[in-house]
Structures are given as structure tokens and as C-alpha cells.
Image 1 (spheres, helix red, strand yellow):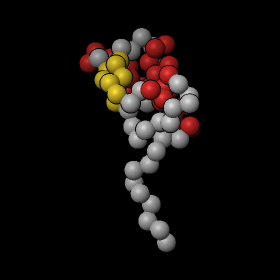
Image 2 (cartoon, helix red, strand yellow):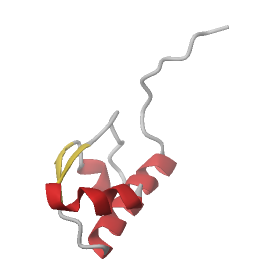
Image 3 (spheres, one colour):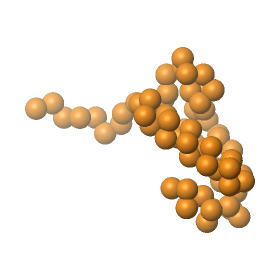
Image 4 (tube, one colour):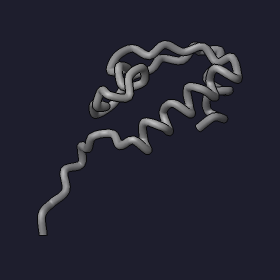
Length: 68
């Protein structure tokens, strides 16, 4: 049996989850910054990479935890 690589590309379903989380952050006024690998969020023709990085304002961490 072929061993599966633990690193996998994001699927459209995962991309939707990321977009939904960021939409929830916006609705709850949680301040965040997407640091890199965000292009797939803006253009559906771009293939998502392996991950993307966000930073959340320290004061909003508790609210952000509730989103997850």
C-alpha cells in the first residue's frame, strides 16, 4: 500500500472553510492580517497552496477561538 504524504494541497472544501472563518472574523469585528499565500482567496482560478498564514490581534484571540 502506498504511504500517503502528510502534506497535502488544500481542496476547494478547505478553501471554503478558510473563507467562512475569515467571513466570521469580519462579522465579529475580529482584526486579522493574512500574511502570505492568500491569492487563492481572491481568485478562484488560482490553485491553493499548502497553507496560508494569518495573525490575529491579541485582544481578539478569545473571540477568534470561539469561531474555531
